[in-house]
Image 1 (cartoon, rainbow, N blue to C red):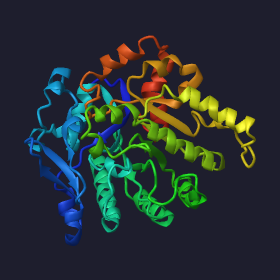
Image 2: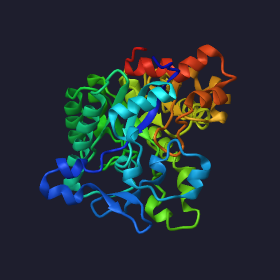
Image 3: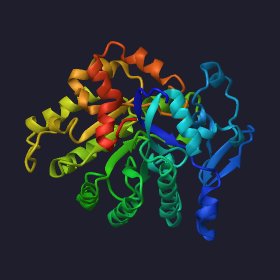
Image 4: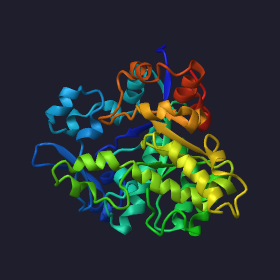
Length: 373
C-alpha cells in the first residue's frame, strides 16, 4: 500500500471535453462548453460565444519551470489522464502521497469567478451537467474523492433548489459559491434561504479566488502587456470581498454549524482581516443582533486553504491553526504534484508535528468526515 502523508483541500477536476455536448438539450449545445482550436495550435474551452479559455496553466501540473517557460500550447490529446479520469486520478494521488482530494471545477470555474457572461437560459443546465458529473466521478472512490457542486445564483430559490438536488446525489460534500451572485450581493437578506439550506443539508460552502469586482475580465487583461500579472497577483482580493459580504450578513452567527471555506486565496492577509473584523465589531457598534464575535468563527465556521504561503505560516498563532488546510492545487501550474510530500517538508518543516498534522490532514478530515486508510 502507498504511504499517505496528506489530504489536499483544493484540487480541480478537469471536465471531459464532450461532457456538455453529450448531456445538454440539443437546443443549448451551442451555448455550452466545448473544445475549440486556437490560432497558436493549442486547445481551449469556450462557453457559448464567450472568449475561449486556453488549457495551458490549468493542466500544467508536474511540469518543470523550464517547460512552463517554453509555453508550448496545450492540446487535449496530451492532457494527463489523471486530470479527468477517476482511476488515473487515484493513481496520481498514490504517486503524490495524498489520501484524499477535495475537487473544484477547472474550465467551468470561470462561471464561479465571474470571468464570463453566460446565456441565462443555459447557465443552470450547464451547472447541473457539471454537478451530475462530479457526483459520478467521486462515486468511483467516495472515501478519497471529495466533490463540490456549483451553485446557480439567478435567484435564491434556484440556489436552494439545486442545493437540495445535489444533496440527494451521492458524494457531493459542498457548494461552490460564485465570488459575486447573479442577483444582488451576499450581504443581501434575500440569500438567507441559502444559508439555512446549507446548514440544514450539511453542505459546506466555498468561495474560490477569481475576479475582484473592479477587475476587467481575464480575456481583456490578456491583451495588455503583463496584464496577466495583475490577474494572478490581485485575484485573491475577490475572496476577501466575497467573504466580507458573507461575514457581515451574519449567517455564521445564526448557523453555528455552517462551514465556509476560502479557497486558493492564500492566507497571509487573514490575521489583519480577522483583527479588523474584531475592531469593526466592537469599535463601530456593529455587534447589534450578533450572539457571537467574529473571531469565534475562525476554525469553527471559517476555514482557508493554502499551498505555499510562508508569510501566513509565520502568523499561524494570529490566524489560528485550526483554521487552515493545505492544498496541492492539482492539476494547475502552481501544483506541488508529483512532489507534494517534499513540498510540505520544505514549507512546513519548522512547524511542530501536531500542528503540521492539523494543517495537512486532521482539519480537512474532520470537515469532510474522512477516515484514513
